[in-house]
Amino acid sequence: GENVEQHPSTLSVQEGDSAVIKCTYSDSASNYFPWYKQELGKGPQLIIDIRSNVGEKKDQRIAVTLNKTAKHFSLHITETQPEDSAVYFCAASLGGNTPLVFGKGTRLSVIA
Amino acid sequence: EADIYQTPRYLVIGTGKKITLECSQTMGHDKMYWYQQDPGMELHLIHYSYGVNSTEKGDLSSESTVSRIRTEHFPLTLESARPSHTSQYLCASRVGGADTQYFGPGTRLTVL
Image 1 (cartoon, rainbow over the protein chains, first blue to last red):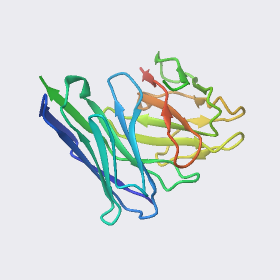
Image 2: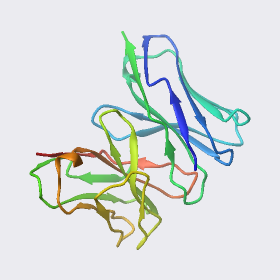
Image 3: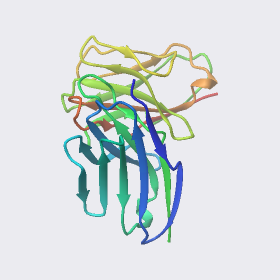
């Protein structure tokens, strides 16, 4: 089955700096890659996603890149702000009825 | 904001009690999921459903059971709660394999 590895597990950055979180997946048939942000006391919320026919997607300060050949995808957050502090999860999906497979999460701390 | 709800949000109970965690969504999603989230962040899939009268066990063995009698409702039941069941339980739903998965706010369960 699919396996998703996520790194790093914790990340601290200064406010205004960029943050990068990386994930690798094992099944080349995976075709959907969402990223979730989980704030304290809340459920994870989708922040951006990418499908296998696209290499990069941006939404304001966040972007995701996908390298299908290497089977890895990354989340980039620019100009980080204290409110970006949260736990971030990557996931991969084979589509159809197969559940999402999540990485183990990255705890991002943005230091003011 | 996702239309997926979980009750109760917090629950403290004694060992041996039977409990049901409620999850409902008003988006008409066929697929629903239950995750157990440990303090280390990782999301563990414990049950999922493709639709009415469909239930499947997830990757993490769980002593809980689920039912799916109505599309919008996916309750999780523990027949006899134990301290090892203390955790955060997250419910989620989505339409198809490559569509957005929405999470509820979670239920934090403490078994004394």
